[in-house]
Image 1: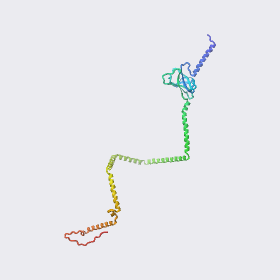
Image 2: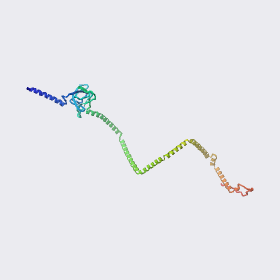
Image 3: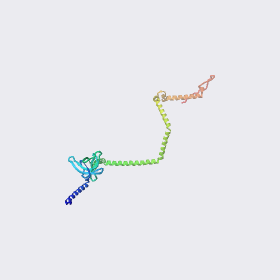
Image 4: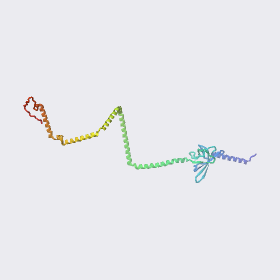
Length: 330
């Protein structure tokens, strides 16, 4: 059977069209003869997501975006249609998240697998989420920092203005003087420290001897601890005895005696009484002195001539001796 040229041209055109369709879908990443599961997700903003963008699961591409449909102009709802390969078990509570696929701003649809036991079926709708872009993320982090930096700069500017107002020329001069004084004080401290170091170095042996003596004293105290304890006990007993004694009554009697003695001394000082008259009457003193002298002379004469005053005779004979006049010393 002979085929006409028209038939051949038609078959060739169909084959070419079929190859064209397969090639275009291949370039788009569509598998024409593969079984896929079609899914949907709603977003208020797709943030640059476009058809043929990849759908990934755990970083592996498992499908692609098919179509973007604006379903509500007032509420800004966009329906994204995409498909995944048949045989992938994806829980129904999974999330379809739009995110950046690289630094150049490319987008992809990331499937965050849920933990449910029911898996998606064809034409199911997943919950959609929109991840912030790199620029938005940076802005979200930088904006608070920028606000804080601006506030800090304003505060620093205010502080600088206040400092300029406070630190006038007189204050600056006082600060320079204070710094100079502090420097001089530090130099004095340094010199004192050096002197102390020199003294310590030169007097090391002496300090060692002092420490040794102190240690010896401490050892002596330790060795005589029993004796010291006994002394302290004796002092305690003495204190208790002293406390128990009637010191107050004794002191009152002593005070009373001192008062009487003072009274007597006052009378003597005024010339009252025999002792006062003896101390203040000069004639009485002279008379007593003369009497004492006469008595002394009499005793001397009695010792020298006892027969003049005492007569003792067996026969009663009297001594006719010459009488002498007794001279009384003046």
